[in-house]
Structure formats: C-alpha cells, structure tokens
Amino acid sequence: MLIKKTSDIKSSEITDEKLYHKRRQFMVGAATAATGALLAACKKSAPPNVATAPPPKLEGIVKSSFTVDEPQTSLKDITSYNNFYEFGTDKSDPAANAHTLITRPWTVAVEGEVMKPKTFDIDELLRLAPLEERVYRFRCVEAWSMVIPWIGFPLNEIIKRVEPTSKAKFVQFTTLLDPRQMPEQRYGTLEWPYVEGLRMDEAMHPLAILAVGLYGQVLPNQNGAPIRLVVPWKYGFKSIKSVVKIQFVETQPRTTWNLMGPDEYGFYSNVNPEVNHPRWSQGSERRIGEFKRRTTLPFNGYADQVASLYSGMDLRKEY
Ligand SMILES: Nc1nc2c(c(=O)[nH]1)N[C@H]1C(S)=C(S)[C@@H](COP(=O)(O)O)O[C@H]1N2
Ligand SMILES: [Mo]
Image: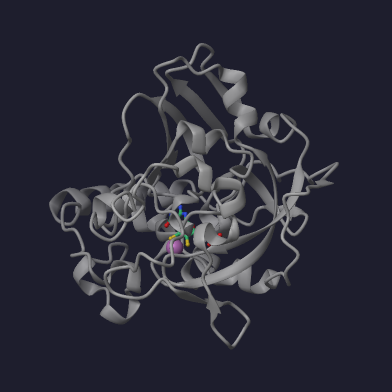
C-alpha cells in the first residue's frame, strides 16, 4: 500500500525532535487517499528515480581559510546519519530513500525585494563564484555534532547579484515540494514545503554558505542535493536542504520547526549552551564517531566571527 497513515508510524520511529509534536492530521484522509491514487498512477508511467542528466564533477575547488582544524567526521557517517524529513524521520531513512530525488535539471528562483530577480540554473550556480572547501563544525539541536568538509560558496555571492532593495530585511528559503520525489510529503509529518529564514545581515555573513558538495564530490541526495544552506553557528535545522527558492522579504519569515514547536525552536536558533532545549541540555554534545561528550561552545565555536551580529539582543528571549 502506498499510503502509510500517520497513525501507523510507530513511536520508535519518531525522533526526539518530533516526539513533542502531535503528528499533524491535516493531510491524512480522503484528500490524501485521492492524491495517493494519483501518485500511484504517475509512478507506474514515470518512475521518478531516473535522473535526467548526471551531475558534473566539481572543478577548481580552492581551500578556504574559514576552516576548523579538527578531525573530520567520516563520509560514511555524514551520508548515513541524516535528518531530511522529506525522506522519512529515522536517521537512516534519507540514505535509503533519497535516490528518488531528481537533481538535474534544477533551478533556484531568487525573488522578492530585489532589483534584479533571477532564476538560476544549478549548473550556473556551480560557476557563480569560486568553489571553496570549508571544514565546518555542524551541530544538531538534538545534541550531536559532526565536522564536515563542505564544498560551496558564500550565500552573499547570490545576494550581491540580485541587488536587494532597502525593504529586504530577511531572507526566506524554501525546499522542493514534490511528493513524487519526496515520499514523506504525502503525510502530515511537517508542514511542507520545509522553509527557513535568516536576517539579512546573517545571510550576508561570509560564514553562511550554499553547499553543493562535500568531501570533494557533488552533494549526496541525503545531504540536500543539489544545493543547501549551511549556517555553522546555528543549529542544524537552519541549514535547509534542496533549496528551490530564495525570497527577500520585509518581515520575519515563517520557519518550519518554529511552526511545529514555537517554544522549542526559535527563529534565531544560535547554538547557545546556556539556553537548554525544554527537554534536554544544550551544554554538551556527542561528536559522531567519538565516545566522550564535548562541551558545546557558544555560537558553535564561531563567536569571534558572529557574536557582534547579536549585540544588544537578549539571546535567551530571541532564541
Ligand atoms: N528540507 C529539509 N532541510 C533540512 C532538514 C529537513 O528535514 N528537511 N533537516 C534539518 C536538520 S534538523 C538537520 S540537523 C540538518 C541535517 O543535515 P545533514 O543530514 O546533512 O547532516 O538538515 C536540516 N535541513
Ligand atoms: Mo537537527
């Protein structure tokens, strides 16, 4: 059967991040059944797991000075322990299921409060700016962390080209919406599509990148191919995957996890060991591949670079 009802999902399949959330029922029911039948029909005639063109090799990668000198998490762990709810809620689901994502052709629409809105083709984005390797710490709100050698370019390279107007105060990012490719979008697990946001100065910060690869290769589907945001001083959920739209807006945009649990996931979501998640401590973390827990650093260790963005703000309130 194609449709797995929300109520069929065992609680053991539900991770910490979502235990709290009542699984939403809004998509379950007659409408979903109808959609499911339609999808089943589509699936027969056109299986979605055939990429139209292979992604290119990444060329001319330069090493960036924005790099931490810490042991890197293994490629295996980075690509098999994932959060990508569009492909299921278990850590192993994205690696098992994300082959149905079609990453070519792919476009990213950049629009809203800008002088020069533009839809970029993914292969154009690969040539937009020099591709850099940046080894970043990455910390999930679930208190585990990794060290990942991303390949990408600063988000501000795109922003500069579209010329934001004076009304552009925030940037909203949107993931692909296509239940044929992203099977969990058939259920009401989260509100789809996944959305995230940054304040304009955060988005302009040179540490914020769009990643198109890791370990020297094109981004694996489970890590957010073909292009995903990486904001290393914030909890992992801000780093939205498989982005299709970047919108410049005047007011603070909606973000997926904030919609699901406003008292647990704020808009800013800066890594802050002093503000615990309501259900667990944020004071330490498990580095994947290590045994002993590590102390979590303010702003995930990037305080020298980013703390000034938040001077004058109460980061307990603005969590
Ligand atoms: N579209 C989308 N982006 C997403 C998520 C998701 O479920 N869907 N999960 C977020 C969370 S909670 C984390 S920790 C990181 C995980 O990135 P990784 O699997 O590459 O380590 O992706 C973030 N981006
Ligand atoms: Mo996360």
